[in-house]
Image 1 (cartoon, rainbow, N blue to C red):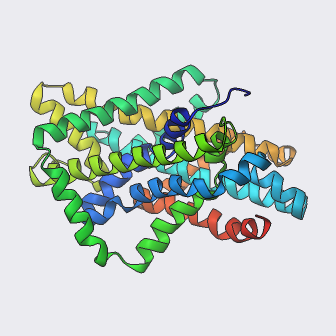
Image 2 (image 1 turned 180 degrees about the horizontal axis):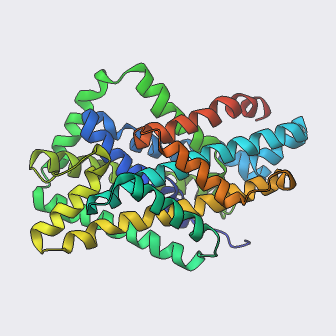
Length: 347
């Protein structure tokens, strides 16, 4: 815990919090259904990391979680309220992992509802054990999928990068007010006040490393956003996206079809890691939610296993059928709407 992080470590750590299944599979779904503006969530994640530059001096000084700081100022009730809301938006993240992972798994001719039950069950059991070493494996799987997307981009043509960037700028005038407020601003603000991000700020060597790390992390996400937009746009136009039953299968379908077009069954190797990533990420967040419930001092009132309760609620939420990004952002909005103004008054 006393190890001080340099700007490279901070930047990579911050970027990997946002860069998960929601970013990858959710943005792929949004690009397929909405066109270029589907990348708005991914870009907002990058801008959110840039915004940490503004809050860094505060957290370098205060260091403690937001619910503890506000609890000291406003009382125990506020502390529990803020901590509860933090748990609520993370339940939404678990739901998005179930949704994304199940649709990726359903590519292998498994009924989607059965896939959701399988993913939820595995998330629950994995959340009950210590998987600190396995978490690195899940991260490498995500990087493997990202590298595969880069290879796909070279295969379909890097000219899709300037085409996608031009399309992005051309589409800006068509972004609606709800796009900017509901997705863009909400994602930035949840990054600004989210403890997942601040935990790395307080471990920095100094303010300069925090600023450089936030810029580096944001830059990584911008590059990944452009890569994703270019690959999905190019794949749609070159016919690499096919045999889907839902837009949530866009990125898994690209990986599967690209692999199968090269060597039979190679598509399984390319697309299956996304399923494992959803399980690993979902189980990690589930453990955080369970600890949050314990920190609220209400454990004795909750007789059901906290990990099971978290996954069960997330499973029910995932049945809503929402798009992955809309699901994530709707839970972000609950947290931001309730906490941001009181935090500003405290700050």
